[in-house]
Length: 506
Image (cartoon, rainbow, N blue to C red; front, side, top):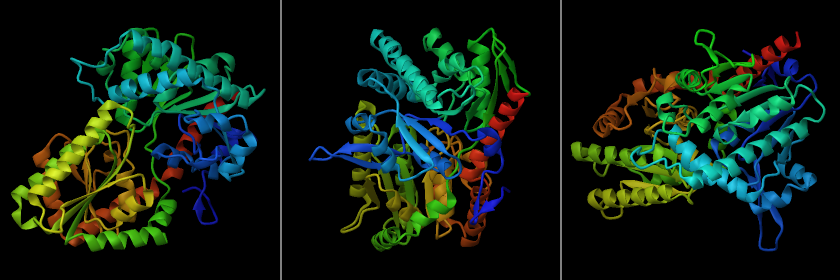
């Protein structure tokens, strides 16, 4: 266990060895603060959304941090030229936010043509290959004039932040920035670089429909780092196989999990399961507003409560979750009118047609189930369609059962949040294909995401589970999340980067 300061675990001496007076540089697509423009034309900061922002905001509590993000709104682009305004909005002396200088057309091509519709769908294995992806002239142009220049712009901005430091410490994040390390490595060969991919890395066979030059650039771009990191051991192994498949001049050592490129550069391939800030999560769940919301929701439910919390998107497998709930009601008539399903669904990528279509199908399915099984003044499924973190945690706190059944997930932090805020010792039903399953398998009820009947059976088992067994299971899960929390996740990465820096120094 790392030493504690003020009752909180610290990341230990690794950060001091690694940074040696430097600021840690982090780059992500989305920043911890984004700026809107009010009716008077004034800039208004608001907290960035998403699990990655929540997780990485924790880093600034431990080390001096400069966080580079893309300007995602007109307000961000205006704020980019006023560092004092940005610093005032972050309200954290140790965290300095900066925006990369990215042209809007290039960003939109990178984000709306390559990153989300293509890489996200491919890596979550959601393509219908007879139809998509379609690498037409527009997609190839978006790669050349969008994704590649945006990655180069991030690299240039990071180098500018590093100043004259010949060996800056840089952590890149996620599928938007697969190529940035190559530019940094060319300009600062001694830079200490890592890249963490938060979403799944699929088997190499799923990359084969892609243009060979693109898939090779992605794999090689990651290998330019010193540490290439993933959520699970399975995803790390899949990346090693991708290097073997698409970079014939590289050497892959599966035992040491090391990739050596033709120029001699070596990259470690590691997995670090991301987690949550346990104390901060509990603080939100115990806030006055969350407690009030929990009481209101409890008053609107019946004897037993099933809860799910997800972004409203196809990879979360929401439709099959509701199909399983309907199967549960069909096969267990005694549960009708006695169980309530609370679904907290956060709007996500609403500009994409697939997401809009999926959202409409989810709403139609909820309406149909309620019409078929509902009674006067009572709905079996209550849908909350908004981004309200306190409300979602309040729902998890009153759950008897939590359903987490994604098709595939890099991690899925909802399962971990449920383990630490559940006040009714909730049983957790979890897909085997969620990254969190690797750490939580011994305490959850496992399901295959496409198995609707199996999921219904797991829900029935969870509802019938004796309280003593639920208590024992959730205690095991809670202890695991507390032990392997967000500080543990960060500490392991900094330890490995510190070892790289020490070796390079010698």
